[in-house]
Amino acid sequence: MKDLKYLAAFSIPVIAFIGLFFKGNLVFLTPVYAFVVIPILELVFPIDTDNLSKEVVEHKLKRKVFDWLLYLNLPLVYGLVFFGIYQVSMTTIETYELIGMILSVGIVLGVNGINVAHELGHRQNTNERFIGKALLLPSQYMHFYIEHNFGHHLHAATPEDPATARYNQTVYSFWFTSIFRQYAKAWKIQQKLLKNSKKSFFSAKNDMFWFILLQISYLLIILFVFGKIGLLFAISSAIVGVLLLESVNYIEHYGLMRLKTKSGRYERVKEMHSWNSNHVIGRIVLYELTRHSDHHFKSSKKYQILDCHDESPQMPFGYPTSMVLAMIPPLWFSIMNKRVPKEMILT
Image 1: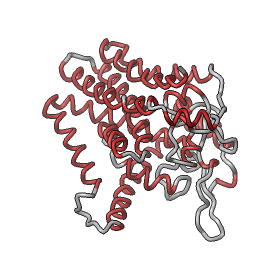
Image 2: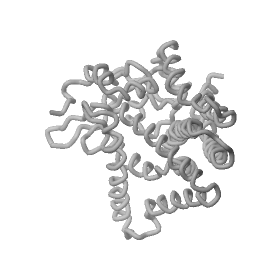
Image 3: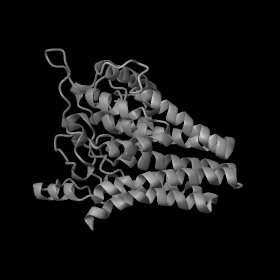
Image 4: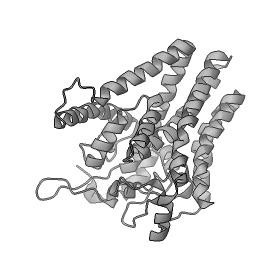
């Protein structure tokens, strides 16, 4: 039964569906659950720093249930998105209900969409990568696959990485720098990949072209079928999903910087270059994303077998709670700045 604990990750889309279906004040049930109830539960439940034995790891890698728990997010995410679009375009709702529905679907796009896409994007299986890219489509963030896999994991915890927050940088500033720099960098990486494979910029192998085509087509279909209100809902919920992702990016590497070696190159990525959290609720709901140090140590490692490293910097709270704290920069700085190793602080 322990293997089925990740079913709890589906609690967010289930609660979002309840809000979309019944409307009224229940449309705000998802943000309250994600950023009030879960943080409270994280304070109640104990921290779990245990790692799996070699025998248990082998057992978990053989069980396909962990993969199917990821795959099931595809119909859930798309079903919820289009149910939300249908509700706002075909039924009479108040403005406050529209706002709550956008927030609810946006949270699902961030947690069950982009987060799961991140996990599947690291897989070697083509079909799994396809599902990962499909989960990025509703958030209009398909370039994340290129920048994250070929950029972030190479440059994490360096000034060259758009997804690494600098010491004393606010989350609001980070939203802008990360989003725009990541998109620009995705194009540069794509050009380099094409050059290495001796393909032209206008080649059919240019994934960035396909991403743009698919995303525009997606929005045009919504506009044609559901009208302007449907399009507004799709774009707005995508923005919420992206900001949720970037808030996670912000806390994952905040202030942590790799030092340069005598050769002038950056030291290799180590366990100390990502913030780790062992708060069990956040771990389960986010498919172990909070054990981020081990993920960067070996990105191909599946979520169900990620380890805790003692040398990793530990967050005092879980990721959901930390995201809330990051929204209040003075509070975030007072808690986190003293935890950043002094040698990593760039002057």
